[in-house]
Image (cartoon, rainbow, N blue to C red; front, side):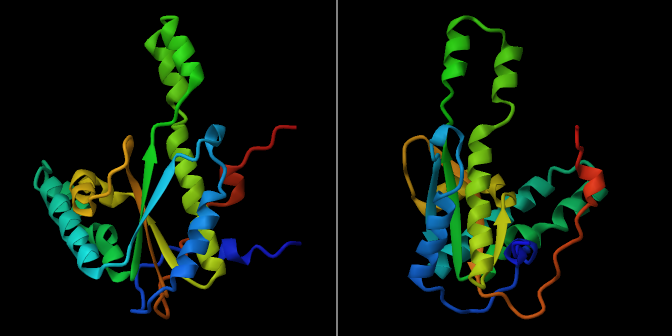
Length: 212
């Protein structure tokens, strides 16, 4: 059988060595990302690469403040503690020498336009957009990046949690491209030794159905 170790060995890495990543390696990973499938081949992604440690640290401070502000709104202590217990997972990108911010633009659906112009009811239009095609395209690109990084010997962590501070992060970065907004980020680097193992997956029989 084909060797798929680069898939099975991929895991979320949150501790990195202070080792610079060659620019040509980053470009190769981004190239892999852009070869992902995208709905109607719209390629609705844009990648912003951060290597400036001051900006990365400031971004972590922004996320921390946003996280604390949300926590302060919790109605009971249990929710507050649960929320605050994951803050280190939302800011672990500060340990990485490279952070890739993944932006997306709107996914254009001709079928939506046609139905909308014919006064289709909201429930019909909602079903049409429910697969969230834009997000699925971004997810495919990110997965290509993660798997390519594993194959090249790097550690990564795919993160959407920090986007609760999306507006503030976008202002900090200063990236402007009409119609694009921050969707997720990827921390990239050489993993420290003995990082936690990949959590176990559910058995296939729980998540797979064959229909003959």
